[in-house]
Length: 328
Image (cartoon, rainbow, N blue to C red):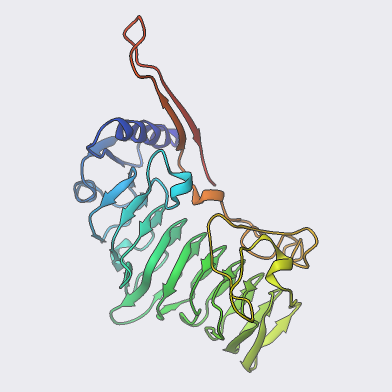
């Protein structure tokens, strides 16, 4: 039954290419599928453990109060030029959504695009792009959240016991105590006021100045930590021009690099980051057990090429050619 929603998603994306009305699939754990024209309609019909598959396009703001999984068509236009990217201005994640997940969506409200209502737990966010701040709200704290392979512009405080791995991080990483940061790239150019009582492994920092207390640092890059009772092991200092195959053109002195999806952030084989992470893989986003996926392609089948004939053949058939690939 697991292949059913994946194959259906391919069909829905192809329908969406040829028609203006969105086709949103709500897939039950038993494979029963219904089609809806709005995200709100699909959400209202959903129950815990259901999957909602969104095509490319703009969708209404929504609050999630069920343990469901929402998968978009992707957040990177370069790899979603056929389907289009899935865009939502703002979303609220309520504690009732604990155990659910979000994947492959571009959140673009710069004043606050992703609001987590405390105390949400065990929620996973994968391969999304956030142009606005991820914030927490309400009493208590949210914990055991997983941010994996996202582009994150800004993150407010209030998350504890959470994991950030293989992300592009553009903010000062003071988010909450007792968190893990593994295989991220930090583009923040100033002094990083990092969270306390945390563990940092295999990260690459642009700035060489970090500040924390009571934290552990293993096999990071450009990570000279100030603060109280930190432990730092196997740090290396290396210019970004020597680390990455193509980090882009810097500005200023010391050099400041801007993240660009068209650059190449694989580490060079000549870099000290190559195969020197705590697990023997590269430091940075292409290391670890969940490396960065090119184009942030979602895990469901994804159309990256289409060719539609201008007219039917002699048998009245319209020839349509699609190419599909998946991320992991």
